[in-house]
Amino acid sequence: MVALTEAVNYEDIVKRLSKKDRIAIVSCNTCVRFIGTGGEGKIDELASRLRNDGFTVTDQVLVTMGCVEQYLRDLHISTAVNKIIVLACKAGIANARRVFPDKEIIGGTKTKGLVVLHRELGVEKLMMAYKEYKGDVGKEYALFTGEEQREEKIKMEVEK
Amino acid sequence: MIISLLSKSYEDLKKEITKNDRIVVWTCNNCIRFCGIGGRDKAKELADLLKKDGYNVIHIETIGTSCVIDLVEERKRHRATAGIFANATAIIPLACEDGYEAVKYVFNDKKVVKVTKTLGLGVLTTDGAVLTAPFEDTGLKETDKGYRLRDAASKLGLYTDFSR
Image (tube, rainbow over all chains, first blue to last red; front, side, top):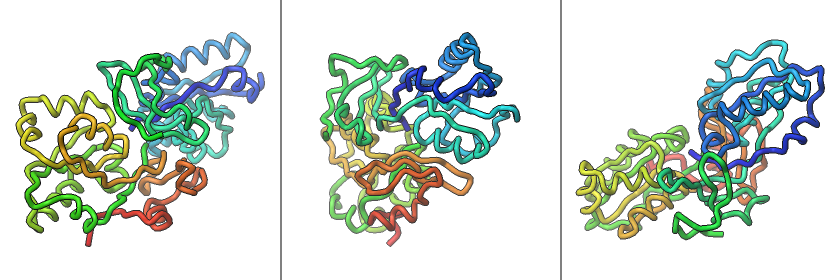
């Protein structure tokens, strides 16, 4: 179930926004929350920063799984919103583009690949990666922060 | 959602097990169910097929997500299932490749038979799962519309069920 993501730089998100925009932030509450790139806290953090910088964030929405079409169809996004920042994996971002074709979708994360995770050890391990992140296969990241770990905790052989 | 398909036909699967094996059919109840190749019903279908062919299926185990290693470990030591897994010689996970790796890691003294190929990420639409972000090595391009899983199976020489 778990995709590993990294956050897009705030400056790269801002480049795609103007002060006239009506902005919604939608976050998945599953994989991105586990690695600290999404979830309610991250929505609040991003919304506050944008508002402090003079942008108009009108909607903040948490969705259980961003990759389920019906979940996005059931969201109530203000009609005035013209841009949606999506904190979800590639699939959640694609889903948002499918469901909200009249709005500009801005991906707030980049997807590295798929992981196994161990809650007691507090880490995720990248097992399968998209091409850009192949060099990271086998690396481990702390749950909820995404901090790269120096020491391997899941002693699992990984095909690189 | 992780998108996976079956990498083996039923006949190929049978080549990796013996009539002496004590088999557990293992299934996730999440992504793989939405891909139509796992979940309780599909696991039972596979177990029934194997039993009909004379294989010794001792148990079907359903788990929320196999990619969470400590959940898999819990099954190994929980009093309700520990005995079953101690007795088993082979596990067939209906799970993505990450789930397969987690099962193999936890049950490292068992034969764990890989039957799936994981293709990337996708969306559960109202018409079923589609593959929107395939891994580059599949040769498929990223697309918001997505590939229907039957089409992806056909393009990649994979299977959508174990039916003979």
